[in-house]
Image (cartoon, rainbow, N blue to C red; front, side, top):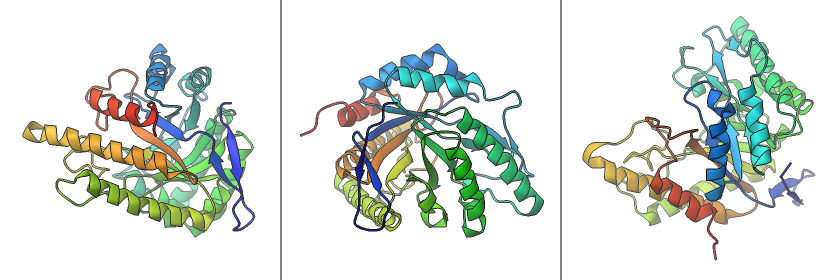
Length: 333
């Protein structure tokens, strides 16, 4: 284990708010399959490369398929080695590890995870099979540093579902020593009914930063000041630290207005898109790095084993690598 905790007790309530001795400078290593790359020799090579950029935490996102009737389709023959091997590889590299399960919704009829919703027998089927998926991953991840119990499925996290999630959280705690969080979309934090039961608030941090068509650095800095004020107000309410469980910008001229967009800009717009993408990352990482206690850090979306050619939100480009290294590896005054 390579996590060092400092306990900071607030005057409000009786729950400690933990701050980290080292911020989470994290990267999510994605996949172009269902995860086989995570067990390849190339995974360790990527960690060596990432450490040079100042990355100290890595995450993977094992998939489970989702059917239209709510069935979560998971591992027939047990949790595969591409889930367990990267944990050991990261530990050997001296890096923290975040387990971040994702639902593969593409054949479910939903257009994104935020639409996932069931009722009646379909809801029971979903809850039972999702529990099996999460418990299997937790049992296979006894020594990870952080475990995300869900991502962007806020349609199923309201008060009517609170008992289910409390039971799920309790079961995960019995299977792993990890700090537990949930990754809510940036505009749906209030939809989650169980923040009091987890160790940290996870935020999918695709906040709009500026509405300007050609935002300047000052525009983005003002946007992040507003965002961080909102985040601080929310975390103070629940006396929990925050981790940005995803933070990413695509190579798009709309990156600051719609960070979630999968559409890239090409042709004569490409140079402006590349410059804006780099500026968005630079401002975000600078603001997060300087923010201090209560905000643990972020997981950048996304890196690949290999060059990730053809993928969007690509971090492994010369320009973005330089931005990451500047903010995370180089000393700051």
